Length: 197
Image (cartoon, rainbow, N blue to C red; front, side, top):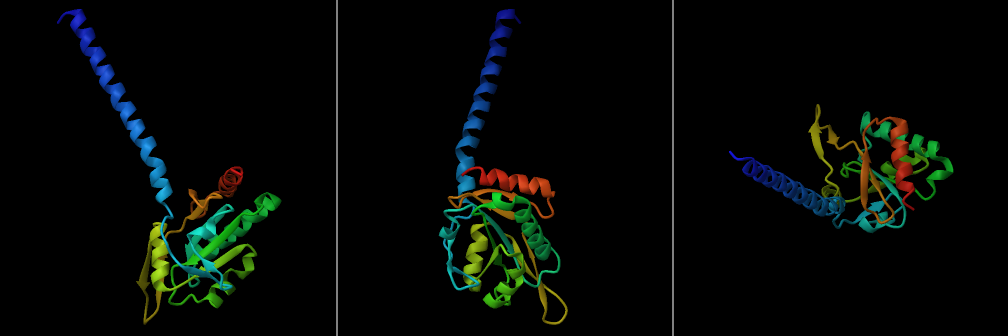
């Protein structure tokens, strides 16, 4: 094969690879914001433990931490509430108008008074509950896994997503803090959220 032919073939391959990479980047850049914006999107009508209506719009105007759990949770939920409290303590005045919410995934047992008592010791977390139907809508909007797991007798527990969602001042999803994530990493993520203004 002549040298000029080889060069032509090589440049053609380079051009195809470059165009493919550009197309892939453009596709990713175009679609990622849409995917992120879709997290949390949806209509639901819940209620905070003090009777205030709670909807998707309740996240607007301030940065937020959002966690889905239940009051009969043996480990994940109390641990996460303790971690959230520790984050606030680490941030101090930096926390500003940061708000935190606990939405139950067990509305059959978690009435407003029960949830209110459950989160009361934190000093920062607002409890949220609602009907089974509306809780399902909220969980679906945030792509939160939750499943009733039968125990002995008529008792049951709940499997559920254990991450804490980070929301910006527009109420938009910004990321998550994993269950038992390193304290410094978690606080760093919140500081980054707060720095958005």
